[in-house]
Length: 164
Length: 417
Image (cartoon, rainbow over all chains, first blue to last red):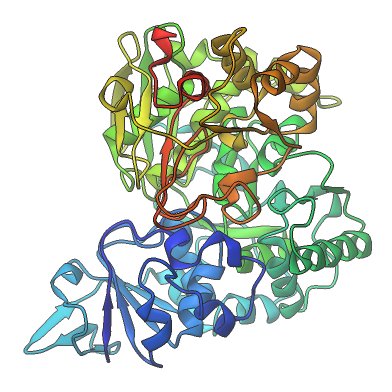
């Protein structure tokens, strides 16, 4: 799938500018994703394309509109050297999978890659790049189908136990 | 092995020792939602089959980003949240009180030792009062509204020890920009910044709030000043039956990193476009042309900030070549500043004084920049496009530097004014 490559410190204002925060529909948000920063993204991104960033991807605001805008553009995976904390959780909560890959910087814009979740690697030409496994506690939320489903299935949650 | 303040707060909740790296589902003492992230949090609450919120008295609900409503969709969001507040019997501060973070502090809704979450990244500001406070997204907030709990990875802490006395017209904002410059925009990702040392102990609450507010700009999950007499005095005036608790790190607590800063020779700092960690000494950017100056935001819109700006301004006027926008952070700060005569002084000098709200820092409501324009702002972010066009530039600074620069129409060292 086609790679949309970005640099370090891609912030949430770049992903979705503040003037669009009254929008909550992912597809409508997607039409403004990276507006003024990378305008061709909203025009040309296709279902299944992959966003690749450098370090500190998604820094800044807690606005969930940012991962929603990427999800609305058909993105399922974001690969980066590192993620900002709130964005990482938000991405998982809206059904995007953020993958931490130390070699993300080597992946070129416009190239074709495939993410192989079961094998735990990314196929990039002849190479296989590895990514870090998702932390166990987040995996249990992903396995439940997301935090909404995890929350819907429960009337209450046990506090301070050793595992979720 | 001893514990950090962050570990102790979670241990207090769980009734057992916890250590950094552990993941716990922890009870929440208070949760804040505003007009940008609130509507989606409420939708998620309903999608999770939420019926009644965990405790209406623990929810803080208000509007600050788009007030008075600047568009029909914004007005609709306000109506949606008002209905939710009514249905759930949540006290609604509506658009009356000011910027969410300042209001939470003023109303004593985040106290020492508590765990507080807000659907806004600058929620980490409440650490100035000794709470563990962190920003979360809307789905996480929907979960909190239903269960009164959220899962946390207990963070490692970075010790920030600050010594020395500030030179005149240098202060908390210059310190936190210097710390960001040193640590970098992702230097504290997932970690808690614990501020200590004589400079912090001598700092009033306003400065502590400025520092903790910007912990997120280094990626931190929280910023905390262990509570002391200054903290207790602040809350004792605001909270009925306020309980003074003792909370500090053990001497043998384990830190991921320990940093020392001496502010004695610190110059006023200016973060240049387009990242917060690109701070420079003001001497190195003095003379830079500016079109707009914004004095306000949750970072620097308090009485003490406006007082500093008014002191630098003196009897002068702002340059006609610059648009100066002043926005007090809350109604309380507005009234104090009004009674002290600062507001009259700003208006006389040529500034626009707006009612308490996020203002240009929201990047959508008003005060936007055209392509090529330059803003100097006391807020917290200078990302590309943060205050309007992606071809505009935002510089960040203290209220003193903002006021000095607004007089001359270019970035100016406040020590020379």
